[in-house]
View 1 (cartoon, rainbow, N blue to C red):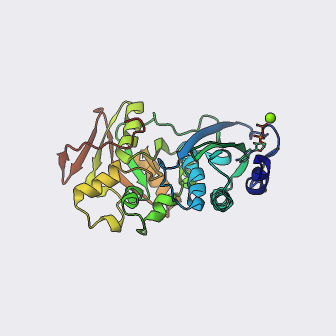
View 2 (cartoon, helix red, strand yellow; view 1 turned 45 degrees about the horizontal axis):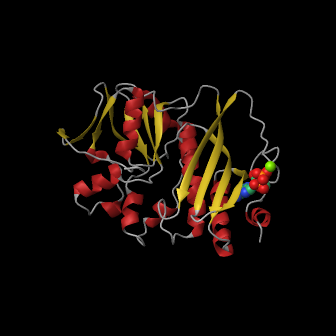
View 3 (cartoon, rainbow, N blue to C red; view 1 turned 45 degrees about the vertical axis):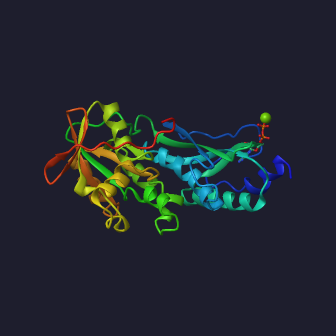
Length: 305
Ligand code: ADP
Ligand code: MG
């Protein structure tokens, strides 16, 4: 089966939203909504590096979309569409069927269209997705807007995916294989949060990006980290390690003033978020427990370490 028939069989479904021209021509065409900025990002998953080789192809498809929608959410933007660059070592129909189904399941859940891509042969299975979204001009929530005394808040729970990676088969593997991009929360935070990032390389490291970009510091309360029950039986140090340095959470970490946080909870009482600390003027990241400062060194995932 040639490249074109792979595209036609697996990657040419109906669009989920308004697309002027999708899969099938040299480029796709979109009409940007008026007064909106294009928000665009890309993320690559390499087999054996970003997921174990025997991962369910459906999960790989889901995750390759989800990690990108998470980046769009972290700007406060609404996701619109994706492009898929796929490098395959061979044509494996079972794999392609599962993968494309997982990819479309995630697209459908968040109202996103697959509008184009590229399909090539390569010795390594590599999946690169580019995601596009829209946001009102000047409304994007960046990493550089944190203000002293802002609350530091995180969505969902952290550390589950890193724990699952070391305990394959545990129910938390769902969190590793099927991360939920916080698309709705991200958009709610537009106009409310001062800064935001999605947590992909470990909470401490990712929060550090906000602190560096905003030229501020933070103090986190170790007792307030949102940690799943399954991790609670571990020694505290280990829980903190997973929660602060584990990767693949795809939660949103944001800073917001007290009033706006109250507004968020008032308007949307069901959003699952936890205050974990506060922004400080000193430019470092500190951890406290029972009022005492802990000197902990947490390093998240680094690709070229
Ligand atoms: P070109 O040779 O002009 O770059 P291609 O033959 O690579 O075009 O692709 C044909 C069409 O199929 C294009 O619209 C392209 O965006 C789309 N396409 C190719 N691979 C994929 C894929 N994996 N997923 C979605 N669309 C794809
Ligand atoms: Mg062409």
